[in-house]
Length: 89
Image (cartoon, rainbow, N blue to C red; front, side):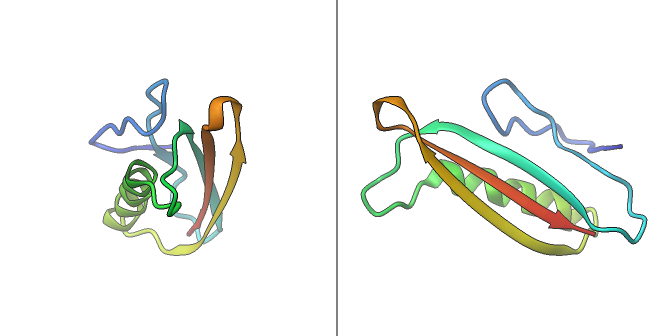
């Protein structure tokens, strides 16, 4: 695993990003935003900031981004959990 010089506090619980070494294979990195309250437009600045931070970290390490997937679930009290999966090489 490659530890980044900068630690990223992405999700509740303080998960640190670690990416697999570049070896020509495609790898997946998944993370969750935890319970967020989305706006009526569905645009959540906190979720966008988390995703952008991961994408930036991958690009700064010269990884190739292959795909980004998103899924959502509605939890108690109307909170939304957003999960992202990023495929990178």
